[in-house]
Length: 224
Image (cartoon, rainbow, N blue to C red; front, side):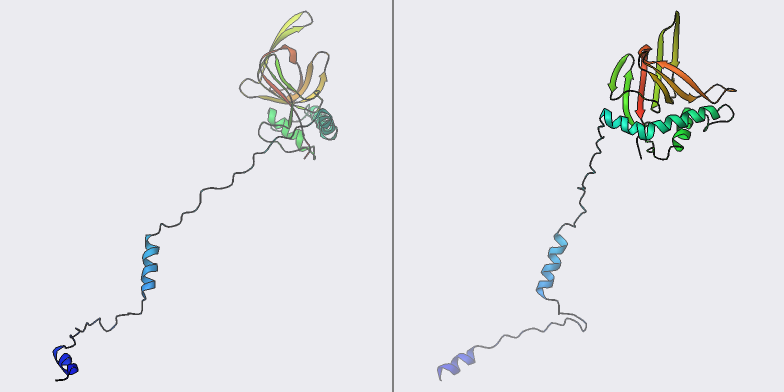
């Protein structure tokens, strides 16, 4: 027997069992699709970044004494003129809503180029005093400036008489400076009159060097 016939007669092809995958089985998915699906299922889902750029902090503009005088010439003079006019009108009619803030709002409403108010900031802080201590003086106090006083108590002498005065208890007092006497360090203020049955705007004088406690701030109204 030839060698080739002997080998072929001793070795037979093993049978391969048939497997039924079903009539509708889809075998078109490749192994690359399987791997991609597996990887995507194991990767963590992307989360939106919480790192957001912070807004720049606004820095207050520093104005020189000359700048403050220029602003007063363009705005403060008008504020004083309007306050004086409203003081005269208050003899016959109510100005604003009768409150300190109402008088300020009514005054600045008649000054078109006055910058809008921001809370209890009435412009550029030119003077601040706590008790008897002057903490800031950036400019001379001028007519048309806005004065703010809280829990302020004054005690001193007027002539031979001793006097005491308390303003801004609870609610701060706000008014418009009508006059400043540098020699006596005294301001005359247009302010709402809280006394029923009287003129709705009054003028009251305060000697700053007589303030013993409390806080006073004076603002220069800025230009819009």
